Amino acid sequence: MKLKFAFAVDNKGNFKDDHFGEADKYIIYEENEGDLVRISEELNTKKDMDESHQHGLKKKGNSISRLLKEKGVNVLVTKQFGKNLDIVSMHFIPVLVSSERPDEAFEIIKKNLFWLRDEWKRDTERYNLFSMKSGLMKTAVKTRK
Image 1: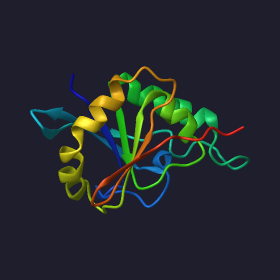
Image 2: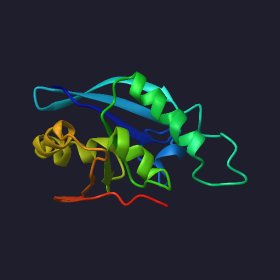
Image 3: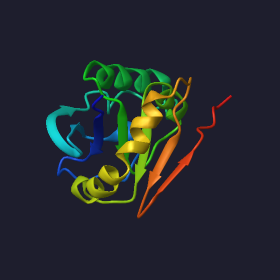
């Protein structure tokens, strides 16, 4: 099984210092023989969905989730998740990174692919949140009430 990753980036290709749903685009990578290979780039057409009345709108989270599920994505990689993390974790493995650029995050992700593969194989209603800096930390996602 090969994992597919969606990296939330700005228009310059750097990780955005904002929630996953605020990315300008998503760069899709696929695991290939222990490496990550870029396969596509998807504009975030849902970025400007009206959230004037409620930030973290579930409609926006669900729309972005549908787009990425259609692309076969399993793992979401970003610097921040917002209020929709509980929705995200039902469909994707959420990964937080501290890196500025995707290529800086590759090595730590590649070193920990087996943990992500194991997480994807789990029969669960929610995937754990992974935080990757110089190492890896896995925590349960708390649901909002």
